[in-house]
Image 1 (cartoon, rainbow, N blue to C red):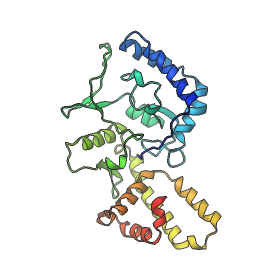
Image 2 (image 1 turned 60 degrees about the horizontal axis):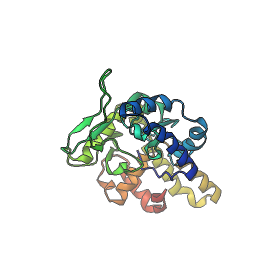
Image 3 (image 1 turned 120 degrees about the vertical axis):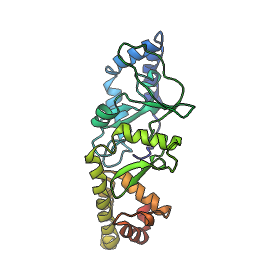
Length: 276
Protein backbone atom coordinates (compact mmCIF):
# COMPACT_ATOMS: atom_id res chain seq x y z
CA UNK A 1 0.00 0.00 0.00
CA UNK A 2 1.06 3.55 -0.74
CA UNK A 3 -0.26 6.95 0.15
CA UNK A 4 -2.61 8.27 -2.52
CA UNK A 5 -2.65 11.83 -3.75
CA UNK A 6 -6.12 12.21 -5.23
CA UNK A 7 -7.13 15.74 -6.20
CA UNK A 8 -10.41 17.14 -4.91
CA UNK A 9 -13.50 16.84 -7.03
CA UNK A 10 -14.70 19.64 -9.21
CA UNK A 11 -17.58 21.69 -7.85
CA UNK A 12 -20.24 20.09 -10.06
CA UNK A 13 -19.26 16.51 -9.27
CA UNK A 14 -19.04 17.35 -5.57
CA UNK A 15 -22.52 18.85 -5.75
CA UNK A 16 -23.80 15.71 -7.50
CA UNK A 17 -22.41 13.53 -4.72
CA UNK A 18 -23.79 15.82 -2.03
CA UNK A 19 -27.26 15.61 -3.56
CA UNK A 20 -27.10 11.81 -3.39
CA UNK A 21 -25.82 11.93 0.19
CA UNK A 22 -28.55 14.33 1.21
CA UNK A 23 -31.14 11.71 0.26
CA UNK A 24 -29.45 9.23 2.58
CA UNK A 25 -29.23 11.75 5.40
CA UNK A 26 -32.92 12.68 5.05
CA UNK A 27 -34.12 9.22 6.01
CA UNK A 28 -36.06 9.00 9.27
CA UNK A 29 -33.39 7.40 11.46
CA UNK A 30 -30.05 5.56 11.37
CA UNK A 31 -31.59 2.19 10.50
CA UNK A 32 -33.51 3.74 7.63
CA UNK A 33 -30.34 5.46 6.40
CA UNK A 34 -28.50 2.12 6.33
CA UNK A 35 -31.32 0.42 4.42
CA UNK A 36 -31.62 3.28 1.92
CA UNK A 37 -27.83 3.49 1.37
CA UNK A 38 -27.54 -0.25 0.69
CA UNK A 39 -30.46 -0.29 -1.69
CA UNK A 40 -29.72 2.86 -3.63
CA UNK A 41 -25.96 2.38 -3.99
CA UNK A 42 -26.80 -0.30 -6.56
CA UNK A 43 -28.74 2.33 -8.51
CA UNK A 44 -26.08 5.04 -8.41
CA UNK A 45 -25.84 7.14 -11.60
CA UNK A 46 -23.50 5.26 -13.93
CA UNK A 47 -22.45 8.35 -15.85
CA UNK A 48 -21.19 10.12 -12.73
CA UNK A 49 -19.32 7.16 -11.29
CA UNK A 50 -18.05 5.36 -14.39
CA UNK A 51 -17.27 8.41 -16.50
CA UNK A 52 -15.92 10.79 -13.87
CA UNK A 53 -15.22 9.35 -10.41
CA UNK A 54 -13.56 6.05 -11.33
CA UNK A 55 -11.06 7.62 -13.75
CA UNK A 56 -10.08 10.21 -11.15
CA UNK A 57 -9.61 7.50 -8.50
CA UNK A 58 -7.57 5.42 -10.95
CA UNK A 59 -5.21 8.19 -12.07
CA UNK A 60 -2.78 8.07 -9.10
CA UNK A 61 -2.69 4.28 -8.78
CA UNK A 62 0.65 2.58 -9.28
CA UNK A 63 1.48 -0.31 -11.58
CA UNK A 64 -0.74 0.83 -14.44
CA UNK A 65 -3.95 0.81 -12.38
CA UNK A 66 -3.33 -1.80 -9.70
CA UNK A 67 -5.47 -2.20 -6.58
CA UNK A 68 -4.84 0.39 -3.89
CA UNK A 69 -4.72 -2.36 -1.25
CA UNK A 70 -2.86 -5.37 -2.67
CA UNK A 71 -1.16 -3.77 -5.73
CA UNK A 72 -1.41 -7.09 -7.54
CA UNK A 73 -4.77 -7.11 -9.29
CA UNK A 74 -6.56 -4.70 -11.57
CA UNK A 75 -8.46 -2.01 -9.66
CA UNK A 76 -11.97 -1.98 -11.07
CA UNK A 77 -14.33 -1.43 -8.13
CA UNK A 78 -15.13 1.68 -6.11
CA UNK A 79 -14.55 0.70 -2.51
CA UNK A 80 -16.00 2.34 0.60
CA UNK A 81 -13.22 2.27 3.16
CA UNK A 82 -15.84 2.92 5.85
CA UNK A 83 -18.66 0.49 4.93
CA UNK A 84 -22.02 2.02 4.17
CA UNK A 85 -23.61 -0.69 6.36
CA UNK A 86 -22.11 1.06 9.40
CA UNK A 87 -21.43 4.57 8.07
CA UNK A 88 -24.36 5.48 5.81
CA UNK A 89 -23.44 9.14 6.24
CA UNK A 90 -20.33 8.40 4.16
CA UNK A 91 -22.03 6.53 1.31
CA UNK A 92 -21.55 9.35 -1.17
CA UNK A 93 -18.53 11.07 0.37
CA UNK A 94 -15.59 11.45 -2.01
CA UNK A 95 -12.96 11.05 0.70
CA UNK A 96 -14.35 7.59 1.55
CA UNK A 97 -13.62 6.15 -1.91
CA UNK A 98 -10.64 4.26 -3.25
CA UNK A 99 -10.36 1.95 -6.26
CA UNK A 100 -9.76 -1.70 -5.36
CA UNK A 101 -9.80 -5.11 -7.00
CA UNK A 102 -12.62 -7.63 -6.69
CA UNK A 103 -10.74 -10.03 -4.36
CA UNK A 104 -9.80 -7.27 -1.90
CA UNK A 105 -13.21 -5.59 -1.99
CA UNK A 106 -15.48 -8.62 -2.22
CA UNK A 107 -13.57 -11.57 -0.75
CA UNK A 108 -11.32 -10.15 1.96
CA UNK A 109 -12.37 -6.77 3.30
CA UNK A 110 -16.08 -6.93 2.43
CA UNK A 111 -17.98 -5.09 5.22
CA UNK A 112 -15.41 -5.84 7.87
CA UNK A 113 -14.28 -2.84 9.86
CA UNK A 114 -12.93 -2.08 13.32
CA UNK A 115 -12.51 0.91 15.58
CA UNK A 116 -9.80 1.70 18.11
CA UNK A 117 -11.64 2.76 21.25
CA UNK A 118 -10.37 5.26 23.79
CA UNK A 119 -9.33 2.43 26.13
CA UNK A 120 -7.08 0.93 23.42
CA UNK A 121 -9.46 -1.92 22.61
CA UNK A 122 -9.85 -2.98 19.00
CA UNK A 123 -13.61 -3.16 18.49
CA UNK A 124 -14.76 -5.05 15.38
CA UNK A 125 -18.09 -3.90 14.02
CA UNK A 126 -20.55 -6.75 13.64
CA UNK A 127 -24.28 -6.84 13.03
CA UNK A 128 -25.68 -10.38 13.25
CA UNK A 129 -28.76 -11.08 11.19
CA UNK A 130 -31.89 -9.95 13.03
CA UNK A 131 -30.03 -7.69 15.48
CA UNK A 132 -30.87 -4.04 16.02
CA UNK A 133 -29.38 -1.61 13.50
CA UNK A 134 -27.61 0.88 15.76
CA UNK A 135 -24.71 3.29 15.13
CA UNK A 136 -21.15 2.18 15.94
CA UNK A 137 -19.44 3.50 19.08
CA UNK A 138 -17.02 6.43 18.96
CA UNK A 139 -13.48 5.48 18.01
CA UNK A 140 -10.67 5.92 15.56
CA UNK A 141 -10.61 3.95 12.33
CA UNK A 142 -8.38 0.87 12.53
CA UNK A 143 -8.02 0.26 8.79
CA UNK A 144 -5.29 2.36 7.23
CA UNK A 145 -6.69 5.06 4.97
CA UNK A 146 -4.21 5.58 2.10
CA UNK A 147 -5.85 8.92 1.32
CA UNK A 148 -4.81 10.18 4.76
CA UNK A 149 -2.22 7.83 6.22
CA UNK A 150 1.19 7.05 4.79
CA UNK A 151 1.26 3.23 4.88
CA UNK A 152 5.07 3.31 4.92
CA UNK A 153 4.84 4.71 8.45
CA UNK A 154 2.81 1.70 9.56
CA UNK A 155 3.87 -1.30 7.45
CA UNK A 156 7.33 -2.89 7.38
CA UNK A 157 8.04 -5.20 4.45
CA UNK A 158 10.44 -8.09 5.08
CA UNK A 159 12.37 -8.05 1.84
CA UNK A 160 13.52 -11.63 2.37
CA UNK A 161 10.05 -13.12 2.70
CA UNK A 162 7.76 -10.59 1.01
CA UNK A 163 5.59 -10.45 4.14
CA UNK A 164 4.39 -7.39 6.02
CA UNK A 165 4.64 -6.62 9.74
CA UNK A 166 3.92 -3.58 11.88
CA UNK A 167 6.57 -0.89 11.60
CA UNK A 168 6.66 -0.43 15.36
CA UNK A 169 8.61 -1.85 18.28
CA UNK A 170 5.56 -1.54 20.54
CA UNK A 171 3.04 -4.19 19.56
CA UNK A 172 0.40 -2.58 21.80
CA UNK A 173 0.68 0.86 20.23
CA UNK A 174 -2.20 2.22 18.12
CA UNK A 175 0.20 2.28 15.17
CA UNK A 176 0.96 -1.45 15.50
CA UNK A 177 -2.69 -2.37 16.06
CA UNK A 178 -3.75 -0.50 12.94
CA UNK A 179 -0.98 -2.12 10.90
CA UNK A 180 -1.79 -5.62 12.14
CA UNK A 181 -5.50 -5.12 11.51
CA UNK A 182 -4.91 -3.86 7.97
CA UNK A 183 -2.60 -6.77 7.13
CA UNK A 184 -5.11 -9.25 8.53
CA UNK A 185 -8.33 -7.86 7.06
CA UNK A 186 -6.88 -7.48 3.56
CA UNK A 187 -5.10 -10.84 3.62
CA UNK A 188 -1.82 -9.19 2.60
CA UNK A 189 0.24 -12.06 4.04
CA UNK A 190 -2.32 -14.81 3.50
CA UNK A 191 -2.31 -14.79 -0.29
CA UNK A 192 0.73 -16.58 -1.70
CA UNK A 193 0.36 -14.77 -5.00
CA UNK A 194 0.88 -11.43 -3.26
CA UNK A 195 3.83 -12.62 -1.18
CA UNK A 196 5.55 -14.14 -4.21
CA UNK A 197 4.68 -11.07 -6.28
CA UNK A 198 6.41 -8.76 -3.82
CA UNK A 199 9.48 -11.02 -3.80
CA UNK A 200 9.58 -11.05 -7.60
CA UNK A 201 9.13 -7.27 -7.71
CA UNK A 202 12.31 -6.82 -5.68
CA UNK A 203 14.37 -8.50 -8.38
CA UNK A 204 12.50 -6.79 -11.21
CA UNK A 205 13.26 -3.40 -9.69
CA UNK A 206 16.91 -4.34 -9.25
CA UNK A 207 17.18 -5.45 -12.89
CA UNK A 208 15.62 -2.20 -14.11
CA UNK A 209 17.80 -0.11 -11.82
CA UNK A 210 21.02 -1.91 -12.82
CA UNK A 211 20.14 -1.51 -16.48
CA UNK A 212 19.66 2.20 -15.92
CA UNK A 213 22.95 2.55 -14.03
CA UNK A 214 24.98 0.60 -16.59
CA UNK A 215 23.44 1.77 -19.85
CA UNK A 216 21.37 4.95 -19.61
CA UNK A 217 24.17 7.28 -20.72
CA UNK A 218 24.20 5.54 -24.11
CA UNK A 219 20.43 5.78 -24.54
CA UNK A 220 18.58 8.46 -26.44
CA UNK A 221 16.16 10.63 -24.51
CA UNK A 222 13.28 8.69 -26.02
CA UNK A 223 14.79 5.43 -24.75
CA UNK A 224 15.21 6.88 -21.27
CA UNK A 225 11.60 7.99 -21.18
CA UNK A 226 10.43 4.58 -22.38
CA UNK A 227 12.44 2.80 -19.65
CA UNK A 228 10.99 5.12 -17.02
CA UNK A 229 7.51 4.39 -18.33
CA UNK A 230 8.18 0.66 -18.00
CA UNK A 231 9.46 1.22 -14.49
CA UNK A 232 6.34 3.11 -13.40
CA UNK A 233 4.08 0.37 -14.75
CA UNK A 234 5.60 -2.27 -12.47
CA UNK A 235 3.34 -3.92 -9.91
CA UNK A 236 3.97 -3.74 -6.15
CA UNK A 237 5.20 -0.18 -6.14
CA UNK A 238 5.34 -0.29 -2.34
CA UNK A 239 8.39 -2.59 -2.61
CA UNK A 240 10.26 0.18 -4.37
CA UNK A 241 9.01 2.78 -1.89
CA UNK A 242 10.28 0.67 1.01
CA UNK A 243 13.71 0.39 -0.63
CA UNK A 244 13.95 4.13 -1.22
CA UNK A 245 12.79 5.00 2.28
CA UNK A 246 15.31 2.67 3.89
CA UNK A 247 18.13 3.94 1.73
CA UNK A 248 17.31 7.55 2.65
CA UNK A 249 17.18 6.58 6.33
CA UNK A 250 20.46 4.60 6.01
CA UNK A 251 18.62 1.46 7.07
CA UNK A 252 19.00 -0.51 3.84
CA UNK A 253 22.50 -1.67 4.70
CA UNK A 254 21.18 -3.32 7.86
CA UNK A 255 18.65 -5.43 5.93
CA UNK A 256 19.73 -9.02 5.40
CA UNK A 257 18.22 -9.64 1.96
CA UNK A 258 20.71 -10.84 -0.61
CA UNK A 259 20.60 -7.89 -3.02
CA UNK A 260 20.95 -5.07 -0.48
CA UNK A 261 24.51 -4.25 -1.55
CA UNK A 262 23.49 -4.10 -5.22
CA UNK A 263 20.69 -1.63 -4.48
CA UNK A 264 23.01 0.53 -2.37
CA UNK A 265 25.57 0.63 -5.18
CA UNK A 266 22.99 1.52 -7.81
CA UNK A 267 21.36 4.23 -5.70
CA UNK A 268 24.76 5.78 -5.07
CA UNK A 269 25.54 5.74 -8.80
CA UNK A 270 22.11 6.97 -9.89
CA UNK A 271 20.64 9.12 -7.09
CA UNK A 272 18.01 10.40 -9.51
CA UNK A 273 16.31 7.00 -9.12
CA UNK A 274 15.36 7.92 -5.56
CA UNK A 275 12.79 10.32 -6.99
CA UNK A 276 11.19 7.87 -9.41
